[in-house]
Image 1 (cartoon, rainbow, N blue to C red):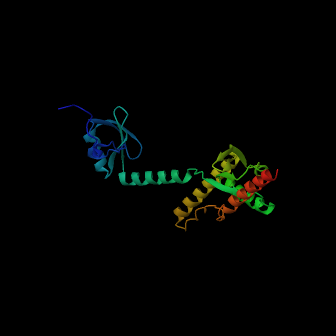
Image 2 (cartoon, rainbow, N blue to C red):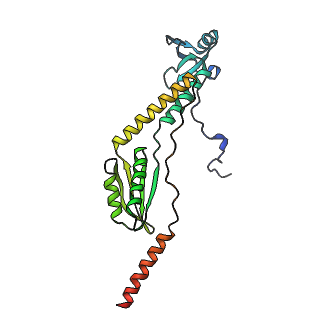
Image 3 (cartoon, rainbow, N blue to C red):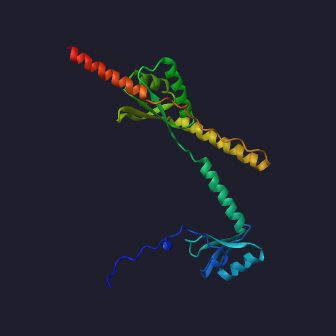
Length: 236
């Protein structure tokens, strides 16, 4: 029988670390921290488990890599609940940066440019990046970048993507610092409301531009320009 690699068995996939509790702690001795935080020293595991049971609590392994492993006497159900709350809070405090796209068309008028500048500023001040997509690299881009110079840095220089040119701007560090402070204040208000049993403050709504029409007009403009150039070539 030829020897080869063992067949993959998904049931044998490695699991993430799982906290060992009570009888799942199989080492002969452990270093024990009591429920009040006092050190009980190194005890036989069965003795440490007995002390936990006398208090109506659990023996929980909190540092399996120590020699001997460190265990704490505590309420494991409450411990798991607190850990889930910490993880949820960490996820809420995480900065999620989105890339918002703004399209610029040839012959964009001043009113439309001002509207797009205001939209880009809202995105940047909310901590998001902004991607400008243009049919041609024209002066409107320079106008917009100058108008946003106080809140943004150019992250990606103009580059071609298919028939369009694009560039990305990102919030300046000072803007991101303000965003982090605002999120921290919102989280504090949420925790306070939860503690007092009040309605939770609404989560910040996502900022988006209204739907824009298709780029067919832009394609027509490109075709008209190309036809015009061809016509001039024939007349010459």
